[in-house]
Image (tube, rainbow, N blue to C red):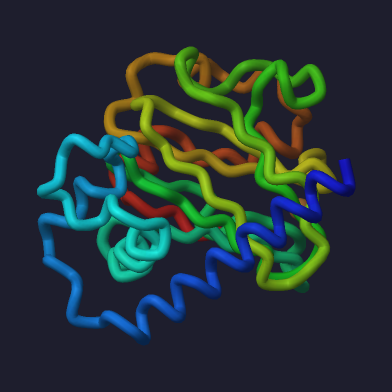
Length: 208
Ligand SMILES: [Cu+2]
């Protein structure tokens, strides 16, 4: 488990470096608003018209340039207000990549899914579960692309019982498992989840 976590972190960190290098090298490459689709496209070599596909570094560069519009960041924080995800609630379009950043403390971003230590299913039935593993290093990042519409509830393994949980709505809520009341979660977690309605209305619900 530690090995998996380590190698995954190293991978993410090195990709971040490549993104920076790419940014410095080809800042004029963006083709603007049309980019929003390219991050969602599967690696399909038959379509030569999407500029982001040819190499990994270009793809990463495009993603970094898009960060403000189609990418989103969730910080994982421990400070004098406790341990929390910020924002705790987020509305995104399908295909959006969310980057979880370990801002301070030791945290994970882990989907509520039976594969994650017997947890209840609280992501769309067709969605792949995610689990970053616990990060102990400030600045470590984990990315997940939310392709399937619906509501995703997730938690931090060390701090779930203290209410370190988050909710991401992708497109339309669609009546999936996470639209049911979270009765099977620990009370602290249950109380910390923003309602789907609030997220849809506000787009971003900040942490404490
Ligand atoms: Cu945590």
